[in-house]
Length: 254
Image 1 (spheres, rainbow, N blue to C red):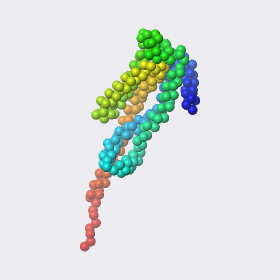
Image 2: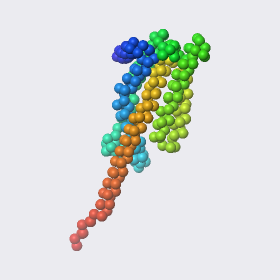
Image 3: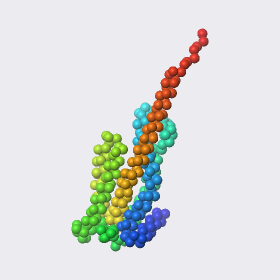
């Protein structure tokens, strides 16, 4: 099954290369096609994440209230999830579903022909930055170095953009994590074929654009709707309490 999937993606990439006349452009086009297919899943994941952020304070309050009674805590949290139609693992499903596609593209990108190039900017997509430096020197590896640096930069940018939705106390920690991850991506990318780096660069640029145009808008909308619903429920609960307090009790007969 996996071999069939990889062979299918390889065939699609070969067709795109014959149409565009350039293997690098074919990698970019295939990446865009896959990302377009995944837009509904990513939107669902974003909505789930935004809803969880809005519900987090109430969830923490329930956890603290029933900290000494795990069974009651689980029951109340489940009830809370049902009231708000929220699945805490729902945001993980889109990530799990897209992993085979990304790993498949990774495998396909490693199998491009040795003479596959990208706009004559990258002479061979099958070579890595490390191998090009070893065989032809630093001057011939400039294009590869640029791709690898982009790899690290576009790993960091989405995390910086996501920090806007992160609690203030966690932003510095998230920034540090992003920097470390970017450095790791540069180190890993140093030995990867240029086709793989090009795929990840194209995918990361798409993610940044999607984050700017779609993701933030969806997050803001879902968070606003969820917070408004919580506020309305709080007001209804307050009204119910007041009504019970003012409800006249029946007089006892002598």
